[in-house]
Amino acid sequence: MSVLKKLAGQTAVYGVSSIVGRVLSYLLVPVYTAYFAAAEFGIVTGLYAYVSFLNVVFTYGMETTFFRFANRPGADHRELYDRVLSLLLLSTGMLTVLLMLLARLLLGLLEIPAGHEQYAIWVALILGLDALAAIPFARLRLEGKARKFAGIRLASILLNVGLNLFFIVLCPWLVQHGIARPLLTAVYNPSLGIGYVFLSNLLASAATLLLLGRELLDFRFRFSLSWLRPLLVYAFPLMLMGLAGMVNETLDRILLPKWLPDGFYPGKSSLTAVGIYGACYRLSIFMSLVIQAFRYAAEPFFFAQSTEKNSPATFAMILKWFTICCAVIFVGISLNVEDFGQLFLRRPEYREGLAVVPVLLLANLFLGVYYNLSVWFKLTDKTYYGTYIGAGGAVLTIVLNFLLIPVLGYMGSALATLACYFLMAVLCWRLGERHFPVPYPMLRLGLWLLLATLLVAVGWQVEVADWWLRHTWHMGLTVLFLAALYVVERPLKTVR
Image 1 (cartoon, rainbow, N blue to C red):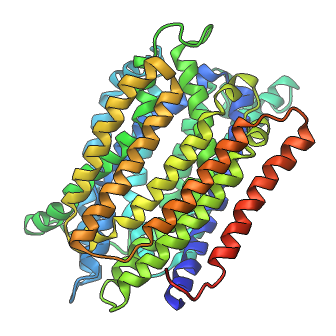
Image 2: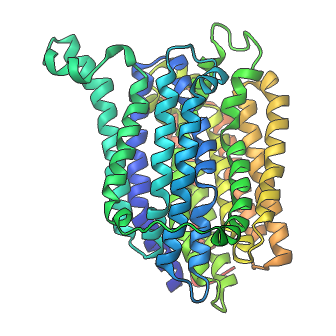
């Protein structure tokens, strides 16, 4: 139990930057949905979908590779840090320039009108700056400097949020009231509009590198071809796995405008549908926040625990409580999603897609389970299995989006995401039983997830018109689930 407490403590510290920071960013959703139409927000959704893909290409698995090689016997952490960062420095420079040259092509794929090429250029610079920060951040995690890691992450997010509010809310208000015109003329261009979302991100990414100055100054360029092969052999499957993961996570927002039939949503363009789906997708952020905070702490933790005799029992216990916690989040948010929609999606057009939120929450829950289960192929250096699993999920994602988008619209994309992550979790568990057996309580967890899903389904199917009665009904279902968990799982010392 002590190791579980240690992991929980580290997760809590990383969660300061992940959860608090992302919640602050999440507070921008009502700003975006109040100031921008769904079609404009569709531009942000589409470009950031490509960012997710390209982030994987820019770092190509080097964070996990850095952790793996740093935990090998006799590893020289300083030399490894220098060599990995040197490699990323070279590749990032080339990729950033290439992406800037292809700016018009990228915008064309999203059907964004000409004249907005600066959006893609800013995105390229954001990707480059974030890639250069990846290994210094990984070094902080390796050295257990969770507080510094969290502080820098949080400062960057706060700056990004502040700049968004300054450019999108404050500056238009000052213009409207004729205040500080000379200063505004120098820093604000009303015609840029949605572009300030990308510009704010770019400035925050640049500030992050400045805050990592000590780690970057403590770096000496070392590049050797003899070092490349073992690093790339381990990292390349991780990159392919990451790309497959991004197909599963973001491809729906790229495919939706291409495969959605004209007039599917009367009076709405395909870019508007992407904006609605992207805004509703963000309501599943609470699940992804927990998963992200967990991953920051768990990856180095799992590697460190791998040599312990009772590590399989520890891994099983971690998965159990992780899944139970996520199931509580799934039930609580799904049964109250209408309130979240009213609070965060300011324009009624965005709230038309709220039905996808429970599906996406459950999908992200299975993604978190998959991340837990994937420890076996990372510890056994069989990362190619992750590539196979991710590729299988990617194929399923593409096929289901192709079949379901013309019939169900963005609900088809949500169902494809759920099916994909469920398949990946099941495949990872079954393969792991052969290569790295862990006594996961799968039947028990499956029953809890089934109960959670049934309660959410009942809550959605039984419609109650009165506001107070509806909320009492949904709260009762939530309390019922919590009570069942308390009664069954109360003996915490028992590992099942």
